[in-house]
Amino acid sequence: MVIFALMIAMLLAMLDNMIVGTAMPTIVGELGGLDHLSWVVTAYTLATAASTPIWGKLGDMYGRKGVFLTSIVIFLGGSALSGMAQSMGELIGFRAIQGLGAGGLMVGVMAIIGDLVPPRERGRYQGIMAGVMAVAMIGGPLVGGTLTDHLGWRWIFYINLPLGAIALAAITAVLHLPKKRSQGRIDYTGAALLTVGITALVLITTWGGNEYAWGSFEIIGLGALGVLALVAFLYVETKVAEPVLPLHIFRNRNFTLVTAIGFLTGFVMFGSTTFLPLYQQTVQGATATNSGLLLLPMLLGMLVVSLVAGRVTTQTGKYKIFPIVGGLLITVGMFLLSTMDTETTRFTSGLYMAVLGMGMGCLMQTTMLVAQNSVEMKDMGVGSSSATLFRTLGGSFGVAILGALFTSQVRDTMTERGGGKAAAITSGSAQLDPASLKLLPPPIRDAYTHAVASGAHQVFLWGALISIIGAVAAWFVKEVPLRGAAAKSADSDGAPAEAAPAAETV
Image (tube, rainbow, N blue to C red):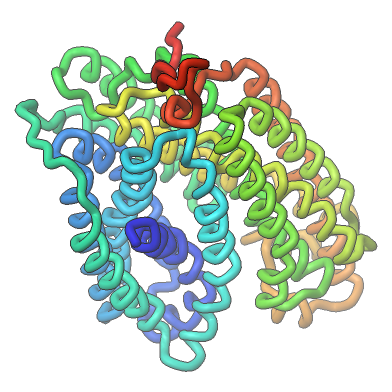
C-alpha cells in the first residue's frame, strides 16, 4: 500500500511535466501572454530543480514522512491554483508553487524507498518505477490532449487533486517511519546560494539561443552569477554544521561516478526524447498523438530491461554489469538513430529506439540504487536528492546544447538546399508545426524535411559521443556489497553473515 501511494506521487510529479505541452495552444488562446509561454514550463522546472536538494536535507533532519506530506500538500495547492488562474502571470506563479512541491515528491519517493527497502531488495521495485516513467512519458501528451478537448485545459491541473488525495490519505494511514527532530539549524545561506546557482544554470539552458544569443550580456551574466553562487555555496558548505548538501558524500568514488553517469544519462535521454517526436512528425509524417505512441519501443525496452536488471540484482547482489552494458547500449542506440534519414521507416527507427530504451533500462534505477548504497542512512535524503538533481540538470543541459546544434544544422541545410528564401522560414525558430509545414511550397517543404533529418543526425551523433563518457565511467564503479545482503545469506554454521559496509571511500 505504501509503494502504491509512493508511485502515485511519483506519477504526479513526472506526469505534470509532460501533460501541459498539448494544452498550451488552448491556454494561450484563453489567457493570452504568448510572449511568456515558455515560462509556464520554465517556472515549474526551475522550482523543481532548486528545491530538490533542500527537500532531501529537510527529510534527513526532521523525518521523511512529515516533509513528504508537506510537499504533496504544496503540489496539490499549486495544482488547484493553476487550474483557477485567470491570467498568464498567475498561471506562471502558480506553476512555480506546483514545481516547489514536485521537487519534494520525487526525492521523497526515492528516499522513503531507500529507508524502507534495503538496496539488495530494491531491485524488485525497479520495474514498477520504470513503468511509472513510461506511463508518464506516453500518457502525458495523450491525457493532456483528451482532457483539454473534452473537459477544458483547467482539468489537466484539477486531475491531480483526486490522485494526490489518495496518495495523501494512504501515506498518512500506512507509512510508519521514526520521527526525528534535529537540533541543528537549517543552512539557509547554503540553500539560498544553491538556489541562485541552479536557477542561473537552468535559465542559461532555457534562454540560451532562444530568448538571447549565447554570447549576449544576459547569458554571460547569468553564467558568471551561477559560477560565483556555486563557488560561494561550496565554501559555505565546508563551514556550517548541517550543510544542505554535505560535500563528504562526494568523497565516495561510487557515488561521484554514478552521479556523473546520471547527469550524462539525463543529458542523452531528455535530448533524444525531445527531438525524436519532431523527426517522426516532420520526416515520417506522424501525427502528434502517433509520435507519442511511436516512442513505445524505447519505453518498452526500458521497462523490460529494468525488470530483468532488478530481478538479477535482487537474486545475486551484483549490479556493476548493468551500468557498463547500459552505457554501451545507449551509445549504440544513439549511433543507430544518427543514421536515420528521410527514407528511414518507422519499423527501423522503432528497432533503434528499442536499443536505446534497453540501455536506459540498465541505468535509470541502477544508478539511484548505487547512489543510495554509497551513503550512510542519515544522508539518504541528500544522496537521493543529489542524484535526482544532477539527472535533472543533465536533462536541461542536454535539451539546450543539443537544441542549439539542431537549430544550427537545420538553418545551414535550409540555406544549402533552398537558398535565402528557405532559410528565412527558420530564422525565428528551427521548428515548424505540422500545420505550418503543409502550407509550404513543395520544394521548400522538401528542403525542410531534409534539414530536420540532418539536424536529428547531429543531435544523435553527438549524443552517442557523449554516451561513451558514461560507458567509460561505469567501468570504474566498484562492486560494493549491497546493504541487506546479509539477510539473504548465512555462514556455514547457519549464523547470519555480517552486514556489508555502505561503501569504500577514496
